[in-house]
Length: 625
Image (cartoon, rainbow, N blue to C red; front, side, top):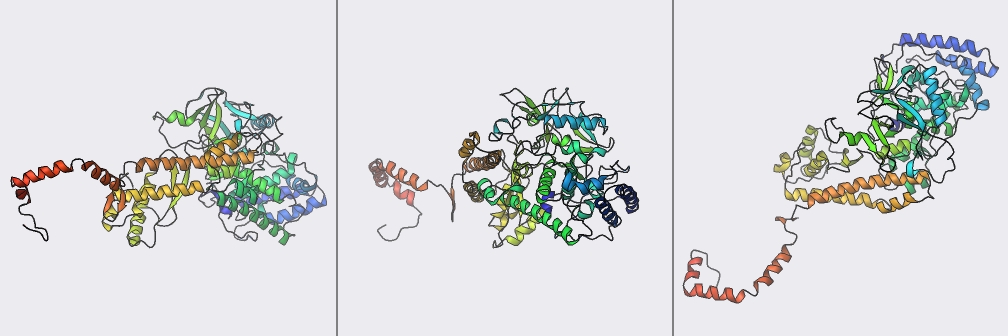
């Protein structure tokens, strides 16, 4: 279940040598043990316990006894952000601070706006920028980006109008100067980022994270560091990490039934919530089972609420770095709002600008979709670059690194992108095993790279997916001669009857999806205009609306394809659905001309012309001549 948080990412093995890691562990063990002897007896006990665990970090001798699921962790190559050659500066009293944090530490900052994980107060954002610039040597911070008060409600017209937290000024990130495509607008050094390597090197949480997914490792690191509050060297960054009380990880059964009924993520949201709870219970069971290895007072910070909150923050804020092949928590950069990724369009395409620039007609403000964050090997930094030319004053949005649809964005953020330019849904398709041509069809599909079971295709609001339609056409083929008439690269109709059946089945699927909701699109719009609904209800309504718009767009596309098909399938082939009506009309129209036609036929008979027309034809049964 924990693999749900990895969202179909692959895994690779760590390449860092064991010998260098063992030497680094030994150096850290000696440093931390010497520091711990200067504090209270509780800290000394914690230090000896932690140091004994650090000595047992050899991968061949360490076993995981805490989890019921087995997953592999993703790590970067030796030249990436996840494998740093130079040791990072650490606070020498880290064990003592963590040991005393459970009882004496200041509580971490609470969410300042319910439901918006990426909302950061103006004061905290500016303090974080100053900390990165002066203490972390992030020279580019502030060069291209200005941190200013947000223009109006940070949530626009869809904000939580029932919330009383309205006095805090929120941060908004805008361009301080004109930029061209490819310009680096924000760069954060790798030493200021947090990856799974930091969690593995953490003296408190490292014994717990063996064989854990990467995001769970980061969540445990965050959980421990937040417990230390101002005692953590990361405190300026931790203050900007606000949890989301409206996250699906905190949904009740009532919330699922009322808010997510009919949506494509109802089942997955429940699995995520249950998976998070199971992960926490496994951690607490391991701690309770081995009190000598995991002192209860040391791990008192690991409460269910703290773990779920940290996991929710990591799922929303962790940046996937393609070059480094790992997740990373990137200070300041992860506070820039995430927007849906546009479809791949060439810069020379006339529609390119509309995908990367958003103009608000009401306010006159412009937002620009920048590229996604990625690790740059040459500068050893995580960079955010502009994808298009943009003018100073434009609000900065960050393109989603995982190309998620609105449903998946809701799972991570509890929010959706109303202007998602590339929104989609995955619809399933499969063959019927009772089909006489099942074996032959399966072979053809496998040769084309498709599966006969569990095959899914992305469905968009503004276009019909060609491969999806070809798959459905192929599945409805009943004649073996038509098997090779199907094209998966061209929009090619096999036969009118096959096309009619395929489109009708697709239309029925659309109707079933629409009927799964308790409300229609008009109900959702009316609900979002109300002032007495919470942000949780409002955002769930926006999710349902985006899904309904996508299904409605598919229904319109199917109707346009059905319109030219004039007929219905019968045993004799395609027949006009109005054939009976047309026959009746022709009969009534022929009645006034019946006497004239009879007289003309009599004249033909008298002249012998009628016999000439019937000459050679087989005589009917009975009657004369």
